[in-house]
Image (tube, rainbow, N blue to C red; front, side, top):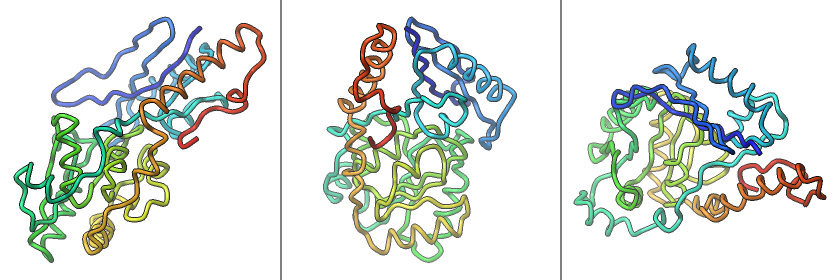
Length: 274
């Protein structure tokens, strides 16, 4: 049995590797490095071609988003985003979270949960948006948080007023799903599966990579000062739920190979939110 699992690796100043093919009995990992602005490169184009070839040899294919699925010519691709730990990423009282982190209870914090030095994360846009907002409200502050333990990141998500997500390109960014699990308002570019994950969640916005548009959305979020109900929309991405969906893919493959009757799960590929 061969299962193609397509993931992506980004080159950074700390890790110059462009990714590597790792083959086990049931798994392939597919590198897909973009340019600094998220545009296709020679290597990313080569990776897409390789992925298409490998996908034709596999019994089943799992990708993280519809965008990744669209790169393959198979129609039976299974879309299963990465899971999130709902025990770690859960809502907490803002006041207590700020006290634990030593943050000012009077400020309005925007969370940038990535390394600002990684070009594809587009920190300059987040900084420009924060600078624009600070012209009207000096209490607004941008926090760039990365390399934190998961429990501490969850604390920041409860302490902050909004997640600002400005990437050029993503697959299925965990930080957006984690913010949803913490009921943190989100303003994001339209990348990866962010639009699907956010859905119609009130207090979350997908917008163009424009300073004014980002600022307008954040003004609305900060004016309301309300948490979202995003957690209810990502419960299907808990560890056990995602694991069960992966198991069902394996069961489908085994049923086909053994010539057994196919159960209900085989009627269509698994997708996010189902």
